[in-house]
Length: 451
Image (cartoon, rainbow, N blue to C red; front, side, top):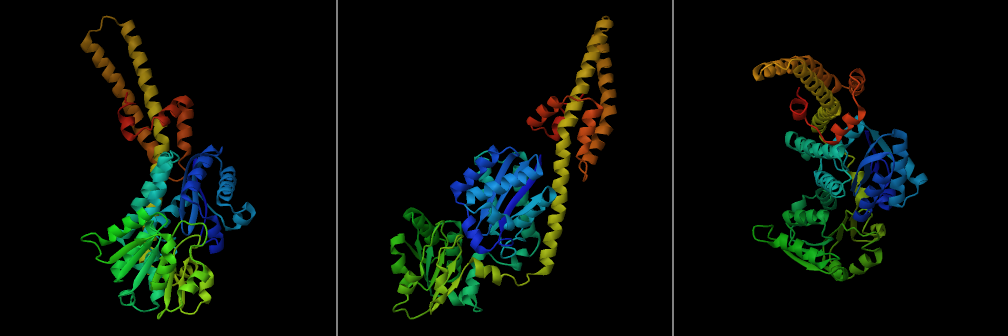
């Protein structure tokens, strides 16, 4: 089986396509289930964020896997395959590992170095585990990507190379004015109460806004976010929750609006924003972090309104980040990809080594039983000494070859050593497969298969 990823992102597709291809939580679950039901895939995981949709799978056939995963993405996103295909990218084996590790480090983000992607990868892994679609390979891959991302952020200054989408978006709204100075004393309306909206509310509070109003379709979630913002030892900002029906009135009083919901249609239309401008003394700043967009792009044409959305953030983030930090992260990623590949290749041969040692142990046991039948007069001490000697001889004969073959298998191109070992020793394929299903470890080689 081999690792394959098929996806699209802000680097490969225009925002208009990403908007239409966005996947709800329920759709992601159905996509995983359908991927597992497809013939080429044994494991599956989906990474869906505001600016990327990627389907990971462990497949037994490359071309069939690409075709199947592309078709599934089209079916579940609602974008026709002919339209979607030009924007899809494909990564296979080590290149797929390199891609996910780069994503985890923030190298592939719209704003280089943003750390929110780690939480999104964690959520993807949790979904795969919940639905039992992520097996050994994808569990190892996603867990290691989280470790690599954390390492990159702790060992380099990649965080300084770019900010989270929220921070970067507010900086764009401030238009050169320090964010704290621009936000001080303002009233903010946050639409949505999910992870991105919560991050936006916390960022606004730290920036010094006077009041935050949270609107959400589920009032309880809005109230929970308000509680977090106002609890003792928190930000100290004034905050209150309102129903979505109250957004129009709150819009007229707000200075800055951040919207990030899971709605499939517009949350704020141009005419609603225009109505809120009547009688206002100051400009209205809008930050749309949703995909598909929450705020009608037509508000760009309204006087006194500044809108920053995913598309404008993509254009603004084209400035070169800190090259030295990016280079250091790339070095980390390259080393981690090599280490992950070596570990996976070594793990691939482990069941074969265990099966070989098990076969050798069976041969030794059979020969000792024959010896006891031919030499019945041996006392207990003599039988024990003969048995130990035979086992020691076989163990020493197998030790160097099995250690060396694990080393060779860990090198690039070493996958064929397991086949060679099975052929040379005429190992039963079903025995090897049963060892694989038992999820063996290095300890098994030393203990379960010891002769």
